[in-house]
Image (cartoon, rainbow, N blue to C red; front, side):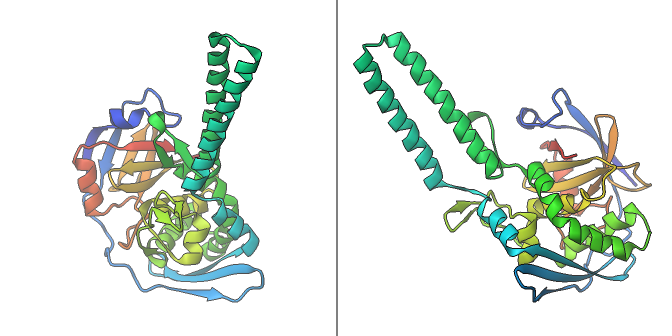
Length: 316
């Protein structure tokens, strides 16, 4: 029923792992049969009138076919500030470079007036370059991105989920009301169904109104807009689940796909990754397939079995 594989995390990926240096493989176990129909049930969304806030009601079904509903609400000023703070602009990068070039010119002129040695000038220019690099990195960090070796940038999904979790606490409490004491596993499954089915799957453009998004919306924007793609939905689901503490989570980056994993002993037949001494049950957040925690789509299994490697990024 299971496929057990030892897959390399990948030399290309290992250099960029966060908090897991020295881990050169992870044991992967894939399910070989889905006990649920992969066709999602009907869902609906509607925006609710609120003064000074955005509010959306989601109607969806649990994996045992129970009708559920939950409301997400966020203050407009909070939403707008987060939206404005997400992504980077070429004009901002150009501004940083202009600052560096002007500072270099000032350093040359000051050195000439003081009759500094070439060694002193070189030292001053080196320090200036380090300041520029720090400003460059701080800018991208503030905008939700990681600067990798070589100056390549990528979305900091783990950081996005962590900083978004408090804004989604109200939605998490809404799900808790529906749970009626049925426990954390029921909550996680309900949140998974909501993200898979009540939020449409649509790819996020990498460039929107001169803003580089990295192909990802923030969780709040995803809920208000009602759509997102696999990495966007992973960040959304992780941010919801972060409001139920007591377990660890990881993000798994495959070629052109993302999954979420959360720590617990896998049930018989569930897909999981054994990593750094813990087992993480895998969740297919993307949808539109309707798959409970522990079960993956066929295309995702093929990506794992291709042997192309994957990245594991610890979340909490």
